[in-house]
Image 1 (cartoon, rainbow, N blue to C red):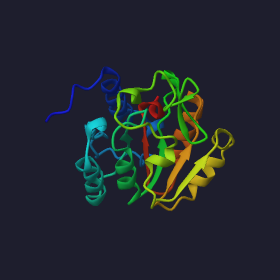
Image 2: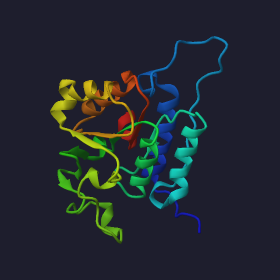
Image 3: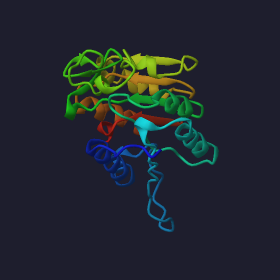
Image 4: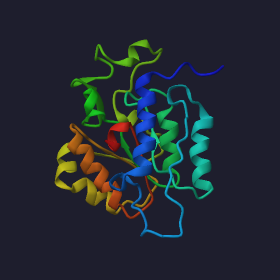
Length: 212
């Protein structure tokens, strides 16, 4: 059965991710190599995984990309964590360090103490939560969307603003998930800068907010 029509907000997020990943040096993950005049222009491959309705095949697509040696620039997820987010995170963590950053401040969706909030209220309690139409309850924290076998470390917003998160990411060795809080677009900018200078294999998993 084909997935239902993609809501406008998610379509916009996909387009923004495609454009920013392909065209913005400041948001290129990992940092671009020195220009090569003989090389073709850099492009981004955007995989439409139908995030909210995807099954194991979508996570397999991520694993196949790593296995083929293709860099994973960005894994786009729903900012309210619907869909098989844990499967995506687990697949990416097999070959890299994952930075899980679903905040979308422009729509008043933030991450605080490792939990997604809508207007400062948890996904489970917010009257605006899209989870009200779901059969299962919303995750209480981002730890719940990370496979139990994968090491997890959270970072407060002060860690993001002080540079502590960037320093920790700079020594990441892969196979773990780092979850920084983000209250504002400036916080996401700090996370993006840390990603752009990280030396090891790192896969950002988040909403389109990280690319703003």
